[in-house]
Image (cartoon, rainbow, N blue to C red; front, side, top):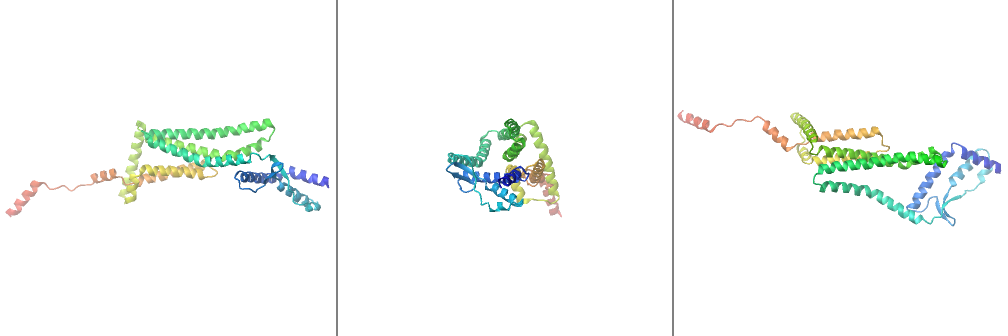
Length: 323
């Protein structure tokens, strides 16, 4: 019996199917550790007199099933085994819970606080275009550096695993699962910083920026006049768009960033789609406004009926009286 059990356990552990068992166990352990960190209780992490441990009943159950399938019918009489593997003393569970709660709070509020500081810095700046340009460059450099550091970390982890005699492929998979989401978010923030920096440069006072604005404004104004000639009129909504151009542009950029952050997994193709859609929507919203200065120019260009001269009116009156 001991030989049968030994062979059954060995075959289970060495088989390719055991990767599924191990993955299920790791998922259960991760869930249990999260449960412990959030002070919800329960899970497969237990506190015993020997210390903090993880129950590995899933592996025992799978081994029992394999033995029964191989014809060892007596294995079906094995009761549920509550095997606990001690992973620590459990003395720092309270500290873990405190640090976990702090990390969750900081992870949620820190981006919002950072964004608030960016906005506040732009609002109090004397030259807002320069402040927008600097904020965009800072965001792009910071987020890009984080993404690059996470990429370098993958190579460092692989080197460490090779030196420690651990499977490099396994550590690569684990590291990718840990930082993949953070890396994508960092690249999205870097892209957002680049867009903000470009917007700040375009709104600046340099000769190149002025020429760029003049060219684009001329093209958009000509397109708006042609659309108005075709009878396309946005009426009050267009007047509101004309007064709120900065707000509308900011909303388009903000919605595009939120869209990028919500996409999982984020690929270069999806990034191109979001950028193209944002540019098209932004351009359409540039064509829709009715701007007071353009309306005034349009009214000035309209043909006028010449007013009669005062002398002509007097002469006409004399002629009428003579007749």
